[in-house]
Length: 245
Image (tube, rainbow, N blue to C red; front, side):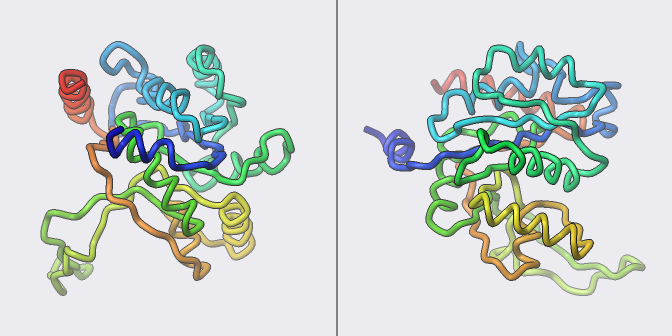
């Protein structure tokens, strides 16, 4: 048994996956939600849904989407038995996650010990990385997938003048999925609402509460689709993976 298969079998967790698919995709310039675009023969979102369907630790999936995409998302979700609900998204990523957490807390049948949050615009997530970040969260309560920063990073003032160079060996780019003990992430969102705190990702809310979050380096490309060229790169990466298999 290789290391990857061994890791899959080691992790005993029951996870609810919140899959975010409510973005407006303005930078993609496609006139529709990018998660519904074709990627190597199937919709972008289907790649993530198929992975979750095949991953034992993912017990159910809550898809968060806009009202205008609801019918398409429902049709897309039909082949995937783990999709339990299509939830209306909010005006921001944070609001969308909050709405999904509210639905999770309101329905006892959805209760699991762990919650993972993943961007639907990241269709290339590898199962090994998914399991690795779940395992890290299982150990410590909160973990996110991330990648090393390879460029030299500068901190600049408002007028553009470089203030300092940051040590890149301590810098990492946050990705998804981000995985948390369910009561921990629900408490963080409740606290953020009460204190009117905003953040660009879920882990930031826990950090602001003083909770520890652990990073797991991605072992393979976990590209986020943002601009048209990203689709070209994603197709190339899929082809490369298929050849390797």
